Image (cartoon, rainbow over all chains, first blue to last red; front, side, top):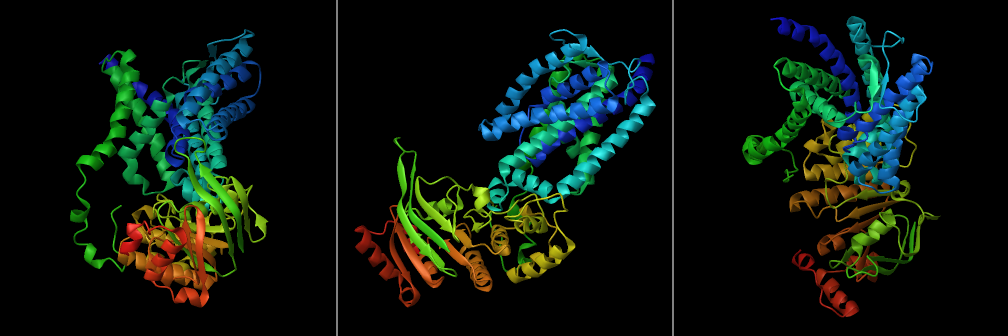
Length: 322
Length: 264
């Protein structure tokens, strides 16, 4: 009974973590869904955001400045991946892995700065000593602030992807041939998307460091999987709600993140060895990724059968096989 | 309007797969010319169009569009001067975006893309009127995703997008080859209409000799990376498929090697 109460009391924390990772997953959404690039930079850039924020606050910078710098540091790591990918012609996945490796060293160095050492793998950022925006020590306040942040981030992105430049990014992700034929600099769009995405991821990293009270070199391990999980779970469970509206789609991503961490807490409550959690996440993501493929392969009615009654009413142009 | 001076391109030079695709192509198009391009497989028809569009840099020669030497410009920079329709109907439009969003992107070809809203109310009205020209009922489905359209509908939309901001040259790369005959005819009819109404200069690659004769005011035939035959005006109007095949064997000293073209 006691453990059940513990479980219930852990749920607000799961929601808060879910929202932070949901913001991170919005970054993943931009590359994975909009630009059609699987960007592994995020495993490093989330920690870069955390490290920059924690280091700067330890060195006495204000919260605002620290978080802006974390955002910029994330954008720079996205820029590096973008240059690897477009200018140097390295496949996107490999470009992301290379940046991730670069960031491993950079993050150790950054955190070292705060402790006046050549490198550090961990840096505390307790809400007891610092004026942080969110913290697990003050759950109610954190939840409200995170909610506001989610709404602002989603609103800004909704606006951006509705602009001329934003829609050229969407076009780049949808069809490179068409985009170039319409005069869109697709390389620049990819770079910009990676910059924006990793900026958001690093911003989420800065929030995460404040929330959990430290920045750790390992905190980004498997981040891409959690981000993808949030995107995929959100789409699978709440896709019906999004109605092709971009802002609603981003909301489903955050909801997906929340569901992920509630499931995570539940699994721990049920007594699973926490060493298995990463494996479990990977399997869940694999299954969710497979679901649309299986659905298409095994559960789709043949085209002719589905459209039998419609065919008679189609105007002059007959449908071709697609 | 368009000058090609001794344009040459070899793919995979120095390897076992070396392919001399363009071996000195010279061509001059006058404003308003509508040229159909025919030739056997590997003759260099599509390669010529891709060279103009800047899909890859050419080895030597000059490409001048409306007085501008575009040799150094990349594909997206040249897009300012060109409207393009591809053979694959899927290539010309962005499937996950709405019909009106695709048109809005085409409406900004060659312009700076800013942080203004991507489509204005005035544009929506204009697009609705333009879509009516296609006569496919798309004007009532402007917010539908392009991925829901059939290949023929997508190709018709691509045509509209390519001609929306009057291009210096419209490049049609076998744009009806992937469609069934009925749809192909419809798309060709729309092409004719848009080219005539906007008074465009156009190049149309086709495998279909009848189409090549029936459309446009000029016809060129390519073989092994060169233009071997160029007719226009009255002479072109008198052409027949038989005459074209005869002309081909005379000039190239070979049988016309394309079954697909013969059957049409």
